[in-house]
Length: 227
Image 1: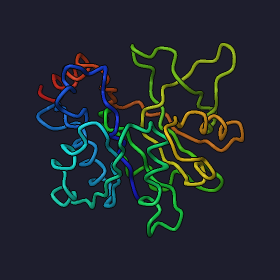
Image 2: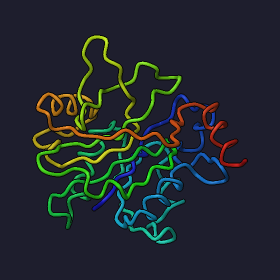
Image 3: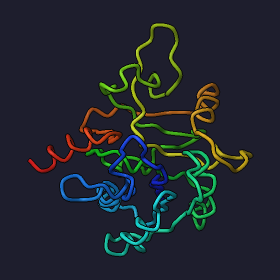
């Protein structure tokens, strides 16, 4: 099973830190954010990883190379401008599908930190599943949440229903993107369409999880990891 790490965002909310350093290379606990993700993927048994990049992406490539130092084989999907989640995945699909027999792949945001075991995702998206999402408690900066987890299925919320937050950890089946034209676009409309068809599943994770969206949250993670 292959994995993709999304690393193409410009990180505008992280300015001025990201003016000269790409967000995936910002450090917490003495280590770049993306390194934390890659080490966890390697420890879970993943070997083939695709990483997309745009803003200052040459720095990311220079820092990670082909991934051999981490026990990985890294392939690069270079974007002239950030294509958002679905756009980035669609451009990277040829790399993700190469020698993969159309199998699902793990997709992880580079700007989160978690102690989630990625090995649990190896057989997560089966049968007619198009996406498998890991959901977490709503953080203070996103109290309304995103989706409802209902008996293992993930769906949009009805009136008055409480929601969980999408963690930035997922398994996607290539069929989720079938027939979708290339270009800058979010994955959310595709997920909502799949949810309406009952083809999105997921799980709730109650372990450690940080969304590193601001310098303050980066500092909080650094304090935790350095303690």
